[in-house]
Length: 195
Image (cartoon, rainbow, N blue to C red; front, side, top):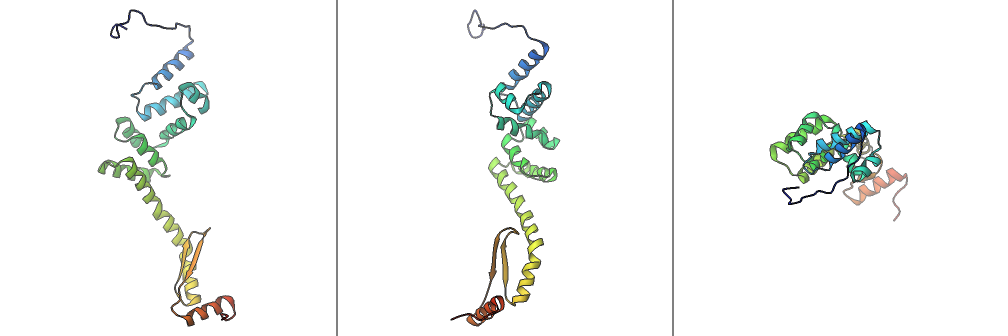
């Protein structure tokens, strides 16, 4: 008050139980601007555990969206070393959100190494996450559809390519001449191509 040049400070004095005092202290602590994402997540977790609130109730008490609370709490699922990076400011909430889209801790830790080694931005991290998803899809596709592609190629005696996934896609059959087209149509339909 003296630094602000005030002789009096408006205040409300009220009696509070130990539980109410704890609630007020934790909520006040959350409203500080200098909390790192892990401190915030841990404070949310403590409030939920201590008072049995839902995320919706907690959101109302601290003036945030429920989805913001839920996203912050997800940080507690990250490997400890990544949580330490968030505490120390080596990684941001944006980096952590991107890492959370990877399902395995091993993948998260591998990408963390890249982020720190190359000082990746959040956008670059998101691109790294996308790249790490692509090989898995391709590997799954090739494991399931390559054999079928080979069978079709052998049966039709021409180049065949399956494009897409198990659920949806297209079959590309390549022919090099009109004669080959007619042969393929007859083989597939069981009757010659009509002029």
